[in-house]
Length: 305
Image (tube, rainbow, N blue to C red; front, top):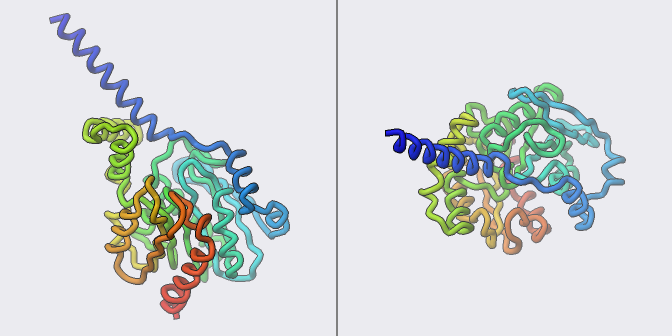
């Protein structure tokens, strides 16, 4: 009997260790170094510090409903009620949003960039790939609506995890912006993990995902199944521009096509010819800008009139 108990104890310990290891890999996904992101954007010519210095701006700390602060910078060179919020991807920070922000500054919008939880200068301990991040985005939107006033005209742009975050936010009870741009989102986090496990580890995902999900539930109080933009896409009434690179083999473009197909109401789809994951703008800048203009003209401004 004691021998059996010892064996069971060891097996339980191994199972718990495996579960903690898997959930750690998800919760504490390795981030890029902030200096690396800065130097990358500088060397690529997508960041002009001198130009940013000359823009009227405010650095702010927005309280999250989870007890930490979100670091944001709001650029307001225009006397307008038109604003954009930008959501970066996992491992990145708000510096990565500057290239997208410049597109909309040029189009007469004021812009707010911020760091997601556990990234950049924001607080927070773990990453949840859009689950808790969508509530943080709500805090950012609520802050901006209070600051800018009731006539706020708002768009939200997101890349990768940021795109999934804005779709999850938009799929909550309130559809809080006037339009959305989702660049290379996953449609379902559990399916995305299954694809990465199968591709990278060559292990059947069904041997790993149930354990990871159990320990995420125990430690973070949500399920991988909760992070599913496809499950809420039909609730989003406002226009969405979906963007994805055709050659993306990290998050498959079929996920964006699935989201596009199930979205009701005004929408557009841009499948960029060049680039891999999160490179649609970097490798197709002219086409990217053209599609934004077409989307704003056809789906946003025409709809608003």
